[in-house]
Length: 406
Image 1 (cartoon, rainbow, N blue to C red):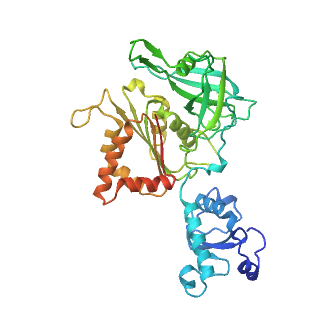
Image 2 (tube, rainbow, N blue to C red; image 1 turned 30 degrees about the vertical axis):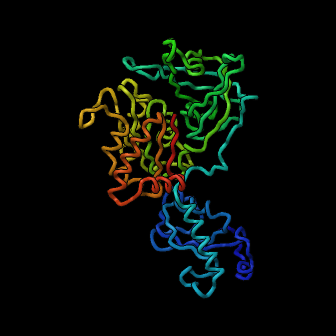
C-alpha cells in the first residue's frame, strides 16, 4: 500500500522509529462511499492486515476510523505481539508497547493538531483592513440589551481561521491617556468558509457593553462593543489574529460534543453547528451527537434561534437543543433556571456521555456558571466513586475539556 516493504533485516536493524513499519490488524471495515473509492482491501467481516510506516500512523488511524474500522492489534513488521514477545525479545517488545501507546493516543477523538492551527497572521502593528458587509440585531423585540451579528469581508487577505478561534478588533481613536485603543478579542461565529461559503468572510457575535459607573452613576458604554454595534455597513475595520487553540472543535466526525453557553458564548458553537449540519464537505460528514445547553434571560434573547431550531428539527438524531431561560423558567424548587440547573437535571446522561473517549465538553460564556456545573458533575461523580477534580484533569489532559469564560 505504501510501496515496497523493506526486508526484515532492514527493519530489525533500524533503531529510528520514523523508518519502522507496523502491521495493524483491523476489523469492522465496511463498504461505504469512502471505501468504494479506496484501493485498500475491504471486507464486511473478519480481519484486514495493513502495513503502516511509523510516521504515517496518525493518518492511517484517521483513515481506518473514517471507514468504520477498529484496530485490535499492532505488531512490528515480522514481529509478534507484546504478550508473545515477553522474555524473548525485550527491545522489540518495548517497540511494540511504544507503538501501541502512540496509536491509542492518536486514535482518541481530539481537536485539530495544534501545529496546524493558524495563529497571529495579522498583528496590531499591521492589522488586516476588513470591511463590514453585515450588521444585524439578534435580540428580538422584548428582549434585553443589544447583540449584533457582524460579517466582515476579508477577501484578498491571508486571514484563515478554524472553528473555535477568535479575532481581534482594534477600535479607532485613543484612550484617556492619549494612546491608541488596544484590541478586543471576540470568538468567531462562522465556519472557516465564512457565512457565504466562499472563504472570504469572518463573522462575530457581539453584545454591547453598558453599565453604570460605580462612583458617578454615569452610564458607560464599552469602547469596542459600542463602536461595532454602531458600525455602518461598508465601513472599514482593523482586524488581528486569528488566535486561540483551546476551543477548537474535534476533527473526528463521530465525536460527541456537549456545549454549554450563556449569551454570546454561543458564537463558537454556531460555527461548529454550521460546519456539522449546514455545509457540505467532501472530507467531513458529521455522524456524531451534538448537545447544546444554552442559557439566556428571555426567549427573545435566544441568539440565532431560528437557525438552531431549524437544525434541531432537521437533525433530531444528531442535535439536541436545551434552553435555560433564567427569567421565564423555574427549577423544581421555584428558583430561577440557570444553565447549571439544566446540567443538574440532565447530569446522569451527561456523566454517561463524558465516559466516552470521543466526547468533548465545552463551556463558553459567563465565568459564573463554572462553579455550578462543577458542583453538579462532582456530585454525580461521587455516586460512581470518582473524584471529579481528578477526572476533569484527565479530560483536560486528553484534550476533551474546553473552557473559555469571562
